[in-house]
Amino acid sequence: MTSGDAAEALRSSLLRIDRSIVSLIAARLNIADVLGGVKRSEGMPVYDRAREITVANL
Image (cartoon, rainbow, N blue to C red; front, side, top):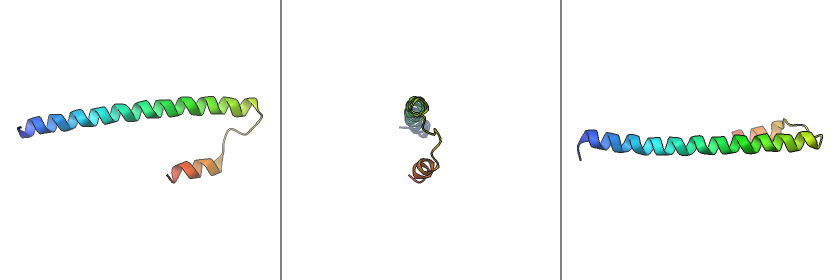
């Protein structure tokens, strides 16, 4: 395998990972949107600072 082939294989691996990341972020955004709707319909505050801190510290 040449260094060019190795670089292409690594780029391909990165692209697969990037696509997975984008897909997971999209899924998370969709769930967060649904959760926001549930909270609004139940009269709960949508923003939760404690939850934001918890997620930021993962």
